[in-house]
Amino acid sequence: MNPAIRVIDLNNDLNFIQESELNVENKSNVAIASAVTSYARVHMLKLKKYCIENNIKIFYFDTDSLFIDKPLPTSFITNNLGDLKLEYIFKEAVFLGPKIYAGITTEDKYICKVKGYKNSKEIPFDKMKSLLNEGAVLELNHVKWFRSLSRSDISLLKSPYLLTPTQNKRKLIYEKGRAVNSHPFKIPLIT
Image 1 (cartoon, rainbow, N blue to C red):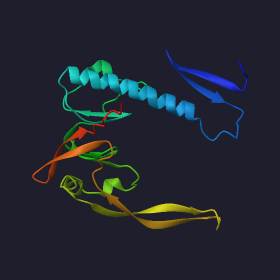
Image 2: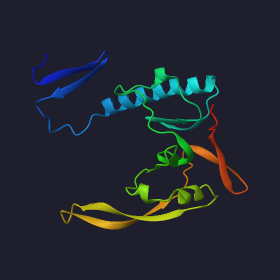
Image 3: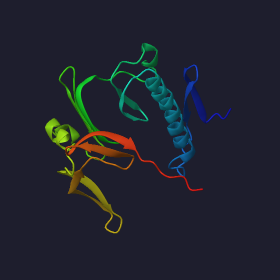
């Protein structure tokens, strides 16, 4: 084994690998990132299959989260690295697209996640719910970092952020001008 590499056993099939000699040429490893994402998708597919087979409604899922209407068996929930853990239970929630959701927990705590927007906790729940109305847009502002290679500097500038339900993966279904469901896009096969 290479003396520059140290392997720490975390559990039966999970290791932490530390390399003591830093290779400054490597900025990322696409193969490892792809493998981790693929493994997460396989794991989530098993959970989705379980939910479908047991009449558990799925409201939203991502590579690292699952929002459903009934509890999973305790065998699915652990504190082990890489496994699911129960973070909160919503009594009311709105899901607007990938990595865009908000809700009130059973402990009356407000949770809001908006991909690419740093101050998501400041968006009131009623504003998030208003985005279920057809054509609704929420105009927000936030401070972003912009770098200029020609000036060799970084600027902090106010930047607009238009928040709207996304339909890049699923088509929203509206009833009386309000989103009530979604369906996957169907792409015809080319023969």
